[in-house]
Image (cartoon, rainbow, N blue to C red; front, side, top):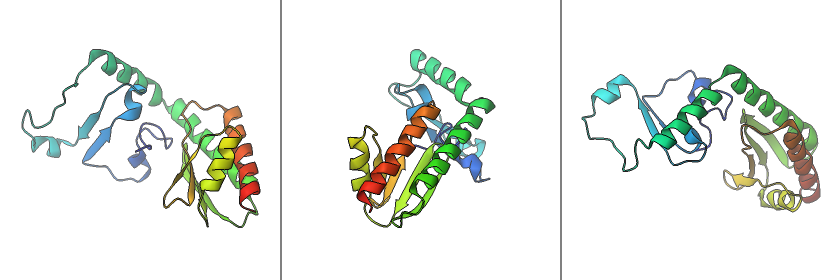
Length: 175
């Protein structure tokens, strides 16, 4: 999963839906790439578990836990999350403008810094053309979506680079 911890412009992706989950898992982004995972439970679900029902061989590593606390301290700041939303809006708007008029582009969608470009054909050629220009992106869905998941600290210049490269790549291979 790539939508947690600020990726959508909210601390947790579920916050966009108005629904509160009974169970929430966290892992990859929680400690900046260090090995950690967490399971957050409602009290009702926690009450159904007995001590020892849940554990991990590497649970509680002090260094990794400190990294997780620091990561959360940064990401949960309202200004940080607002900037993720701003950058995501700029990325989507820029892609929509760069791809406007291309009949093979069906939709640019996303939330925060998880963005997809829906095509009416396989997206691999766009991904390959972008890689040739120095941008690493991948496909998603049934292979007909170009997926962009830049780091939360992506700069405005890097966003513009991605927009320019994808615009050129799409013009080259989706003609």
